[in-house]
Length: 287
Image 1 (cartoon, one colour):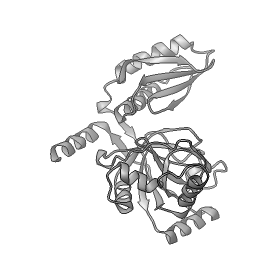
Image 2 (spheres, rainbow, N blue to C red):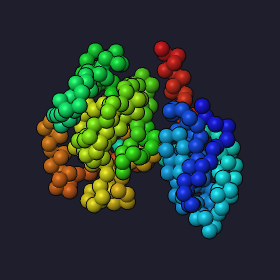
Image 3 (cartoon, rainbow, N blue to C red):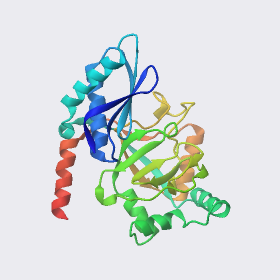
Image 4 (cartoon, rainbow, N blue to C red):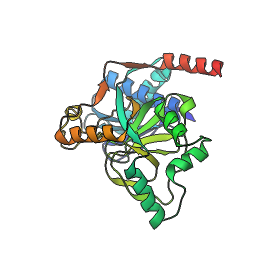
């Protein structure tokens, strides 16, 4: 459900959580981005930072310049004006991420969990069974086919929540229960209908089946992609996964280690919601 009016919750003395709905959907996430774009364009005095999330947004504000009530009133008015997100056009970079499917590192992580915690079905086989896929090759083709929408960053610094823009490539899976105590840096996983890339060695619960050699979070900002930000992705970016083999993985990893790797980022593109909806209608008619 997408709310007719936002719901506002204090999140400390200088933060507000703005909730726009209670579902996990692309339309709701677009509404979040449309509102964020409207707030930025309005240049409200006292608003310091916006953090778009899956179904909500956190606003950091200067309480000496705007009160909680003032921010809520301004945002509610902007939401009413921006609720027609069907026509929105957003700056949207396309970032190509090379990944090695069914790599030895995620395989070792899965094996460790199965030996120490519970003898669950291996993650790739579980994904295939739950989504009626013929096998690992089918999973690889389906997962690598679409562009993915960066809906939000969170859980861990730099970690991205990705939605496939092509509904035909939707893959779903439950999370681990209980979660893993560790996940390899760069692992790719699916939980619910969301794909993520783990930015560091962290606990985790998504079903993992691939790994990228390129960093998506760099505290030291060594590579060109991190000169302006510690995180590679921004909400509203798009991601395409490029399947690679082990020799190319090792080559890219060496370039990253030497500080010579350049991420593949196309930064002059826009995402048109109207064009996207037109494309979705064509898919429906062709089905």
